[in-house]
Length: 368
Ligand SMILES: NC(=O)c1ccc[n+]([C@@H]2O[C@H](COP(=O)([O-])OP(=O)(O)OC[C@H]3O[C@@H](n4cnc5c(N)ncnc54)[C@H](O)[C@@H]3O)[C@@H](O)[C@H]2O)c1
Ligand SMILES: [Zn+2]
Image 1 (cartoon, rainbow, N blue to C red):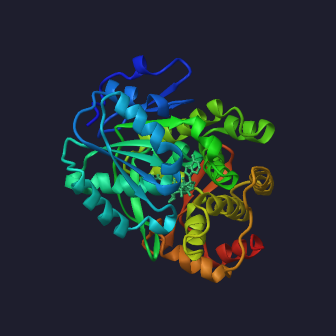
Image 2: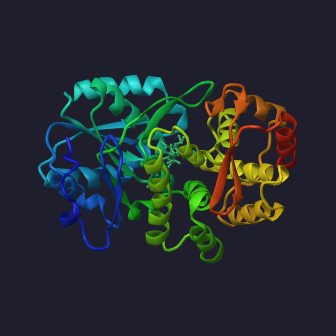
Image 3: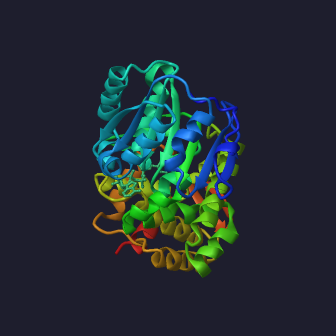
């Protein structure tokens, strides 16, 4: 278990940025810096590590980074059992969770144990859900290695898995004890996966950080040591205002009502970030059609996403099929679909009263 109250500052160097998350069920730190995997043992030992632990990673990430992590942990006297999963959204399901419970039992985990999860949002969400529910919840340390996981999925406490009929339909709130984002791991990330993470960075700019959005437009995504903490801080502000998604937090779903439908229709073959990129364009286009924002906004957004290597149109399915897939999404409220719509960069609203015909029109216009 990691003692969340212990200060970690002493154990990380000056260039590491510390972002404090305050939550009713516990506060935690998100560390962002270079070379943090090598210091993971020191960071965890500094947090008051006790008990047994497992390290979970998907096979791709395990090949790249578990030897570094295991060495770092062992050097600090922390012994963990390594568990590897196949990579891919298709494995973000209850079968994998059940399999993880067995591995947790094999490793002798009890309520004082810790699960360290190393990797992207898929392994983070799945393992996070297993940690949230095993013995009614054991300590979780998130070590994100994709851009998307660093700026979005590893922070904020939502964990869960997909059902065949929809994304993230089973889940829990589980705050991590600590999040350690080593920017150096992004160097091995395939270009397309890096671009996918940028979709959530752009989303955070639209929600609450016009300077971040303009920086991406004018200077691109560098330096990451500036862009990442800015994007993380948008999420921090939103989840601190509404930790259990009673209202305002839904703004983080910008682009997701459309995006989840596209992801489900692709049988989870489309990258989450790619689906969100198209979803952001659709949401902005819908907003313009409803007269809630300038038509120019969707042109400006599409230009930025395109420059970042992201898709801005969907293909393959008919607008009616996308509509039907949206109707089974959990962001529905009763019979109404809930859309998050931009009014300007840095200003979004939640809107439920959208006619089916208008949505179909927008879908037809953004289809390849
Ligand atoms: N919980 C939340 O709040 C939240 C928020 C946003 C997204 N999500 C979820 O996150 C998931 C998407 O996460 P993702 O985009 O990280 O996908 P992912 O976990 O599938 O990772 C993408 C690919 O990159 C590989 N990879 C990971 N790190 C690497 C590295 N450093 N170098 C080389 N390869 C590496 C993985 O093996 C995988 O093949 C979706 O399931 C989405 O629903 C959750
Ligand atoms: Zn997302």
